[in-house]
Image (cartoon, rainbow, N blue to C red; front, side, top):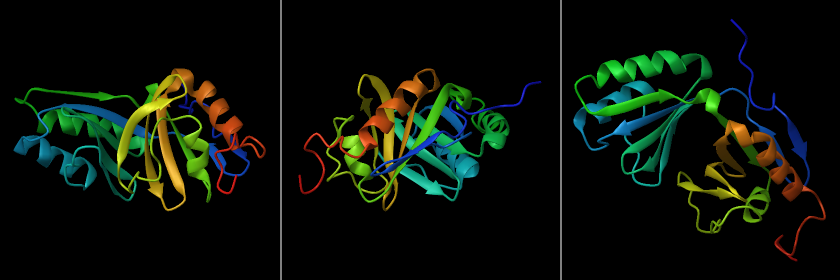
Length: 189
């Protein structure tokens, strides 16, 4: 059996913000009736978090649940725990209409950090970052590809994309973080 590697093996770039591929991350798509008692209980058991409200992500240390659509969550766990978490969710939801899939190896995660991290993303995503509240999850696009993002810390954003476009997304983020790549968007410009 081969050893798992992340999409870009932790590649990073430091410009006026730091961009880094976050490495291996357990990610699970969970679909079903998000209002059902069984679903809420299964999510709590898997993550330690309550069911997130619409367009929100809730985290408990390294585990979390993000609302992706009215019937879909993104469950975050340690990469090594993804398979067992999928099995536990499937068992907890037996008899309920649901879908649970380990998408860890189909996704890539990036962290954009620094006092001007939002400026990097402003160049790529049609999101009003001045109004993006902590814990708010947005499904959007980064240039021409699908992405989801949230403010993960005071000066840090997390972005998730498909693994197949990880190199493209990293290139976009790197270019947008280069000093002199302001395009009139940076503060004080």
